[in-house]
Image (cartoon, rainbow, N blue to C red; front, side, top):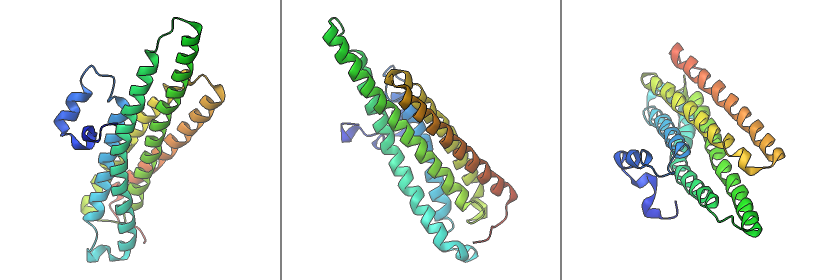
Length: 217
């Protein structure tokens, strides 16, 4: 968001929940999806933290450290994306309210809406891409980290999968306002591919967790 003091990461859970439940247009589903995915990434980082320096998992130490670091970066980055999503949606809302009395005003408003819609679709697409990285990290650690915390990887995969679908909805809803069939088709294809990857990785994560066995390094 424009004001660093108003970043979502600086709010309590109660404060964010109250903002989300207010009549303000932002934060909305995009920001909520980013935060859900951030929580999933944090769970992956937690499992890594519970696995490092454990003799039982020494063979996977480098692997665990790599994905633990990646998960921490994702958790932080997704919180920033929540702010970005609220910012671009606010800009889109402002564009909708531009005057449209004259032909010139109408043209200016139309151009502003299309540009804002591109941004409003672009940020949730980034969130969706980050969700894929979260489930990739959960899958990479499933069966290669502390088995006592394996269920948290399953939870992480569920959060990231739900967040991915939420982000996808926020990409697709903005496509008509972009008013460019080529761009819309391209983004729709990207969304479908990313969702398929997220779902496959999430399911694989849970399959490894359910088996409850260590995999080869």
